[in-house]
Amino acid sequence: ENALFFLIIAGYAAFGVYMYVYYGVAYSMSYSLIACVLSAVTINLYLFMMERKQKGFIKGAFSQYLSPTVIDQIVENPDMLQLGGEKREMTPFFSDIQGFSTISEGLTPEELVQLLNEYLTAMCDIISSHHGTIDKFEGDAIIAFWGAPLKLPNHATIACYATIEMQQRSVELRKMLREQNRPLLYTRMGLNSGPVVVGNMGSAERMDYTMMGDVVNLAARLEGANKFYKTYSMISGSTYELTKEDVDSRQLDIIRVVGKKEPVPVHELLARKNETSSEMSGVVEQYLKGLKLYQDKNFADAVKEFEKVLTIDPEDGPSLTYVKRCGMFIETPPEKDWDGVFTFTEKG
Image 1 (cartoon, one colour):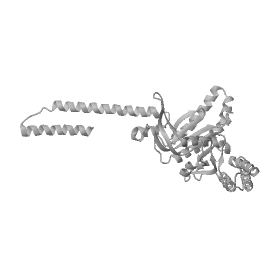
Image 2 (cartoon, rainbow, N blue to C red; image 1 turned 180 degrees about the vertical axis):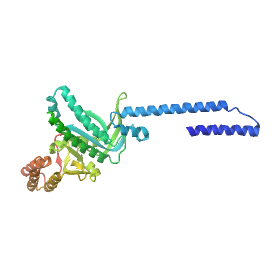
Image 3 (tube, one colour; image 1 turned 135 degrees about the vertical axis):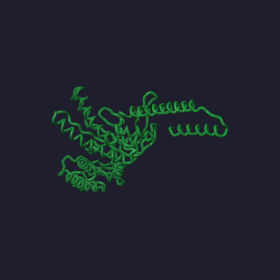
């Protein structure tokens, strides 16, 4: 705008010189220059106020969902933000505290709120520090996502890193709660990656920046599916494929969740790449031998391998699950054309 302003003044001055030299007509430029200056000041002031208003709107709209760092990036580069609905490659996240209804029954309202606020603050600080967007809270459940409003090429990896850190923080919280003789919190988390519809949704009077779609629904199902394997962090095959060079995980199963026809491979998220403990690495190595035998329908030998895992870690959830399931299949074998998919008949 400033360049245009100076161009107009220069053009007007050149026109005045031309008229005087060739036609002897002298123009008084003072009034015109004053008008140009006032116009420029007014336009720049208006643009400044509009920019400030836009920045204020962005900060107000996203302050509850995003970290200050991410908000500052959007404020400085508003073109990165698209508030209307759109389809994006993203990683939705769902979490839920195991047995929270039972825990809440043993607490006063004040104790319950304090416990929940401590927990949610710790978890949400990690989500925000990893550039995640907090969608909403549903009681003790956290719903979040990575990949919007800022596009993140490595959204799945960042989401997994955040999940790993949240589980590590949960261990620290449990230590503190145990020392204070308060209820211990164990959190199940589920991640899925794929195309998601995201944007401002709601009524004309109230809108939320949220997400929807099959990818979102499956992430919620995986959070609940942890219950059947006694695990706490489950990722889908699509998330695994995007993150296998960045994180350690172990193959859990191929499952068909309630309400879905297509089977989904699922993995337990363990740690950042090459950061799994030696004991856990030994558990996974032995467990995979049992899983291979299970997939080959050799259920009797599979049980033996899973029982070897339990001599290393008697509480290894997936091995306990497979010992029980193999026993069921030994007694009642699956169909001859069984494809290895386990179909759930109930939600987690």
